[in-house]
Amino acid sequence: MKIVILLGAPGSGKGTVAARLASENANLKHVSSGDLLRGAVAKGTEAGQKAKAFMEAGQLVPDELIAQMIKDVIAETEGDVTMLLDGFPRNVKQADILADTGAEIRSAVLLDVPDSIIQDRIAGRRTCPKCKAGYHAKDLPPKVEGICDHCGTALVIRKDDNPETVKDRLVVYHQQTEPLIAYYKEKGLLRVIDGNQGPANNAKAFLAAM
Ligand code: AMP
Image (cartoon, rainbow, N blue to C red; front, side, top):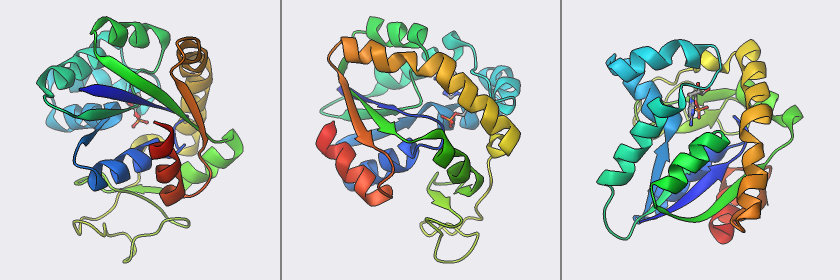
């Protein structure tokens, strides 16, 4: 098992790229820390109950809480699989925890998107709560308004996608997650792609860079 880390601000399109690639390539596995946490919140597990308030405020949940979830997924993943790790690590401490697991990190790919574009992208974001497919009201609409193309479920706007929380999430990104760019550059693992080419071309560029 190898790991490819997706780096980028909230709304940079990491999740869409990873989901698209994983659905097209059987040996790629999309693991989203945000989806793991939202799943735990929905189920009402102990971890979910602890995470909920942090998530709604646009803050990071405690490192140990999300790190344990990721370690569990790594431990249960067998065979010739490349894990597309989307949303973890989010700070240097988490990157150190990941390094300590001994898992082989193949690269860290940054989807580079300016903040000015991010706000607009998140404002239009619609998500399928069942199969996790991502849409945008203007740029990537579903065939039938409000309904997931893949599974027919009604799309939702994430609670933390409101403009106020988005601002907080961007502050957290710049303060805590951006230092990972230098962290992985120093290790020779950083690749940078233009994250503003549309979902299909972003995915192609990502595949070529990883
Ligand atoms: P995302 O879907 O990746 O935007 O994550 C949604 C929310 O889940 C974030 O705003 C955080 O509150 C929480 N979260 C996701 N991944 C992490 C992580 N690696 N560390 C801490 N909190 C996280």
